[in-house]
Length: 411
Image 1 (spheres, rainbow, N blue to C red):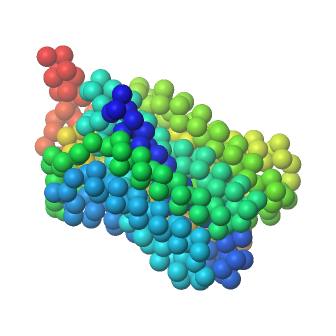
Image 2: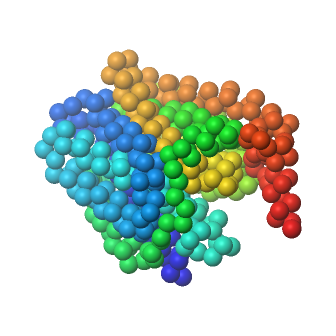
Image 3: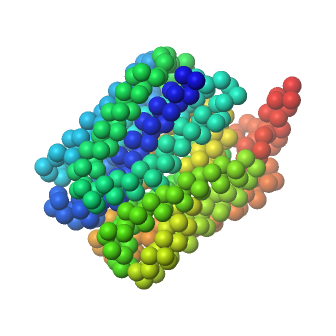
């Protein structure tokens, strides 16, 4: 029981961290007005922590290789809580960006370390379920934390929303102090291990590429969903509720994907890309109808809700023996893509038009369909394998055990 309480404490920490990173998405308009910057410039509040987290994920993992993981996680969640409280009282945009920089360090380091903790917290037979719960914190933050923060910001002001997330971070810190056991490092990784995984593992390379396309495309559009909803005739008072629709659909997408990826991993990725591209394009045709808008956001949320668990599963299956290094790369690309998407969307909104952001996002995600279909055919023929492996030992069979590993399990 204590192990599961520790799992939930880590999950709460990831939920608070990811909500913190993405909170500005739903509050760009009031944030820009309150800090005297354009909506495009306000998008830097998503770009900065994303870029920093992308660098921090591998660096924190390597730098803290000899330190008790419990101590590192508690320190990182404390930094996040303090940075959000500082944002709530900041008097300038520059100070907010400094706080967002610190949040990026916390997000990248915490996520990369927390991904492999389940095996140390619960019995082996529960590791898969515990891992899903931990990464569910990422998903729930994207689809529930941000809409809830938006509603708080709409009713009480954006500073109150940041303050609330800061308090949530401190609550997470207290939970981890009392519930997490000592987690002495078992095996540290070196920086040289990271490019080695990319160089030798085709499945990891493809998974990282898919992460780049899907996440960059999503956040190019989603970072500026509020301005696009307003441009589509939606009243500001309805946006928080509509984002909750997005969140509720996302939770459904997470469970649906969880049921599909065991046997249909590649097909699930293709389905996600198709749904996301269609939903982003449809956002530009909204005519003020709450029912139509809710349906489009539900479709979008359904697709994005399936993304984190699907892509994380792809990476773990591609590199079961080097999961820590591969997960570090995945976290790095995930956060880098958040930053690039917010930056690209901001440039599009400021220099082209508000509606250009979802179209660019849809185009990026659609590239996934082109990139993955040939790979899927190759995989079916046993062509995607890591260097030095035979076809039967390769990761071409993503979605099912390889011949070698299946034999090991049988023995």
